[in-house]
Image 1 (tube, helix red, strand yellow):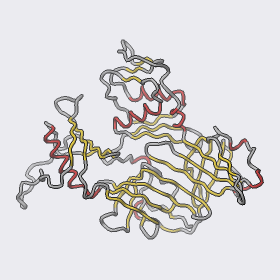
Image 2 (tube, helix red, strand yellow):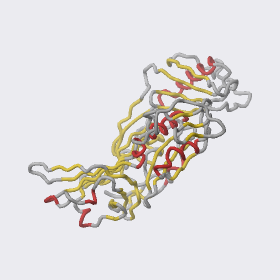
Image 3 (cartoon, rainbow, N blue to C red):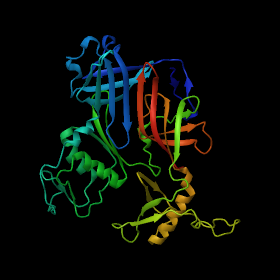
Image 4 (cartoon, helix red, strand yellow):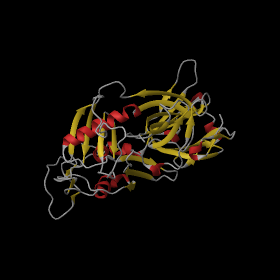
Length: 400
């Protein structure tokens, strides 16, 4: 399969190179005497869960059965590319899976996960009762934090034992009565819960030098973190987009919405409403006169968060809402205008080693209804002898 050269958002051009891969374990790159037995390599990044990698090795005559190289706990790094290979990800190996089938070649399947899996076993040190702190920010032993603690304080306390490098956008966490890590709450669930609460995006990745970094970043109003990608690519159906199965998530259905917006009169109690979308709701931006024009500037009014099932979308309205009835009318109309923009889909693309979850790229060649920029929620890189180098994606269209 040929490689596509870099061309940012202008499309991708074939340059004639075949894809390749490289596997390193505990800092040692596997040579041809081992890689020639590797049948399948994949790396999957996903929004909201630990990244995963898998390789399948032909274990002819049991030559690798006793190898300590593949034991649980070792770190494995993968690189993919065309000509020049690029680091894709690093994982910690879990217990290898051996298979000795009848009439076929034995195999070893190695699976690993990024280091955030370590936090799934870490829990609050002991059962605690909620109490107020006096003259200090934190009781680190009991995992009790002061009212409205800084994110940096919480991250440094919780993740210290894992020796993660931290990459975060600072914020004050909204806990006016203090934050407590409840008994039996894992470190992972606490950090993930904070991300869900604040609308930030959290993930852990490992670089080619063995450094693990925990990211806790604020997306923009479209749910995008621009600094997680160097280029935005265009994948065209019939060329570099091999298949795509779209679904209009909210077309021709009544949909329940939960909407939150800032309350200028009470910062600690935002407006929050639940509504059932009605297609027949009146358009609050129209006064019935087709020739009317806006005669004064539209002022930004902060942000509103719209929750649609698993999706959370932050939108910049054109006004502050002084009461929840105004928010309800605005939300009904916003959703009616964007109903057919909510497209989810899964597909298969040509493999590119710098495409991961939490990025946005363009999909084209499917018609105006479906073409556009998509947020990639899951990306699985796969390289094997049968299908070459491909990516399986799950994505949702970005509302422009």
